[in-house]
Length: 146
Image: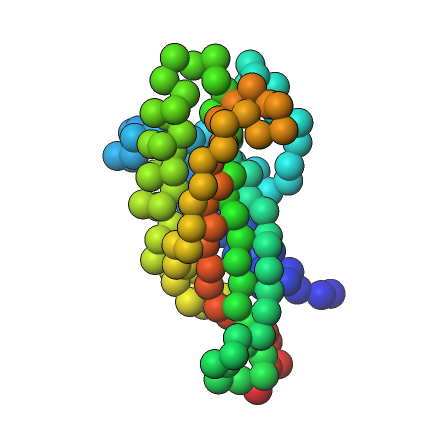
């Protein structure tokens, strides 16, 4: 039986890590209550949520083996604008995501995660929410790669 592809396994581990984003664990928000690996429509009455999106897999210019890959993904946070402090909440959520993931080690699958970029979006695609997208990158070696 085929194994789970390393990029998907990384997303699964990151989702588990994001699930710890709770005030009870010392974070600013409870954004980890709803962390997902698949997109779905957002209802403005929904609670804030996090969704992971794979972006790119590439062969790095400075690769040390033929099986080495660079991998980037985005964590998207959605906070309904019906909240009086939606802008503050999205900024806090982005900070929590970065605190939880920057340097997160998913060993033995990959190198520690590295923050790359974040962006705030107000009402993306007309959705009654503020969104934050936080991009991270890592490197891994495909099994069988020399």
